[in-house]
Image (cartoon, rainbow, N blue to C red; front, side, top):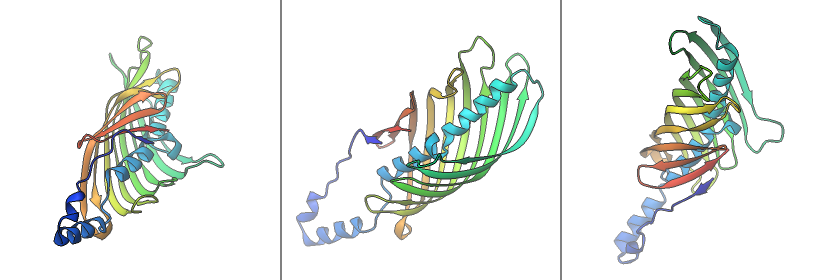
Length: 235
């Protein structure tokens, strides 16, 4: 993950007065959740290499390709996601899926899944409950890509392995609008995820971040937080 912009911090003023110096030290020792922590969590929540939402989107597209002519079909199933042998990120996601196909002038698939996920990445580890809804449209031959609209929530706890090594509990919500999924590769090509991330960190301090992730194709995206900080993520 490459950070595109680094926010400046006005710590020089702390050196002017002893009182301010003490105040700044106290603030730094609180180990607040940072934007870099947020970027690490969102990367893993999205990346297929950690069982993130792009993996579920690909699976939904695969089901849509297989059953696109099965009008009225519906199915419940359980899917277990695990990492490949010797992977840099280890993870496990057990999810209960339900899907159905609604036919008509503009047919679409509806998917829901609920499950538990655990991952251990080089920069972050996490244990979450996951719930999601997805709608896949663009089933006709005239469309080169499926269109996915989705909402995913992850509620759990994380531990950072870098910087201040923060430990925190969080609620992450990802809302995808018109995400394009290639019918050839079944991978996400473009679209946007709106992001909200709230919770409490080390010492009980609450936090709230928001932004958007724009998919750029080729397993990359750009996350921009409302502060203006921007990160390129890869998976």
